[in-house]
Length: 149
Image (cartoon, rainbow, N blue to C red):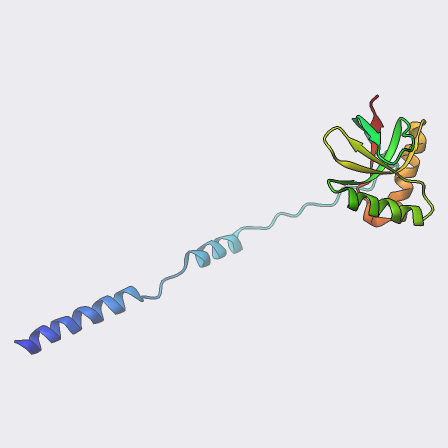
């Protein structure tokens, strides 16, 4: 009787063990094979334009005040925005060492802006912004600020 119970228990254990470990095709393999059977779509690159249109740049407008006592004109080129005054001053000092006369400004939300230069003329701001982007790749996100009084 004992041997029959052991035999039945062993058979149940073996049945459960081998039925749970059946090799099945994984769901990932099914998706992979389905993706392989689909045709790939080719998009031709756009035809080269004969004349490139000038990039349209808009000015972000905000009320800023100079932190370091220098004057801020109507249009400025911003190369950095920081919550930390220390970080902003570090970038300002770096640009001073490069020969620029940057201005440290703060907006109404408390963000410090490093203005590499300020202008009364909008076109001068565009020109310097493009020059900064070309000369310093790390400032490729330099943007234009129009001061609100």
